[in-house]
Amino acid sequence: MIHSPSLPFQIRPFQADDASEFATAVRDSVRSLSDWLDWPQEHYTPDEARAWFAACDQARQAGTADEYGLFEHGSGLLLGGAGIHQIDTSHRCGALGFWVRRTQQWRGIATRAAQLLSRQAFSSLGLQRVELVIAEQNIASRRVAEKLGARFEGMAANRLCIHGRQHAAAIYSLIPHEGATAP
Image (cartoon, rainbow, N blue to C red; front, side, top):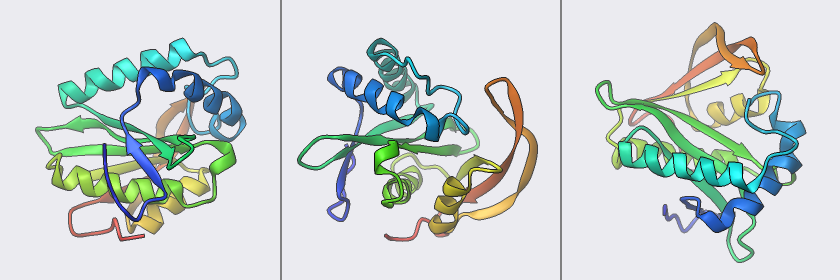
């Protein structure tokens, strides 16, 4: 679990009993997420969620990813997910990703979670570079990168494959002592 007294939500690993809520959040958010992510589907099931949670646990143990759920204090409502993935320990870098449930978007949740996770990537994980690889047309996520103080490094042609189609991606980076400003 990641603690920060300034956050209006809790960041913790997913647990098996989060599966139904996770599946519901994904199904409710398909329209807002599926342009940018391959995995949200209209018929996403709790079993698929549990498989994802198991993959997250295995990746955390292997040191290749550090994924979390974002949960509202008090109600426990699943707000979304965020994490560092594609961790390359030999080059000390990883990629930051996040998604927010449709009904909770535009509240600063992604930015706050990304700030905290990028700091953790530099401290606990010992990374020296965190990348954000964002579909060119995903303006909301690009704004999150900019709010973090991430450096825009350019556009990469055919960098992402979403629903079988290649898309250009904006590449942003954070390095220690740059970006990841306080909320």
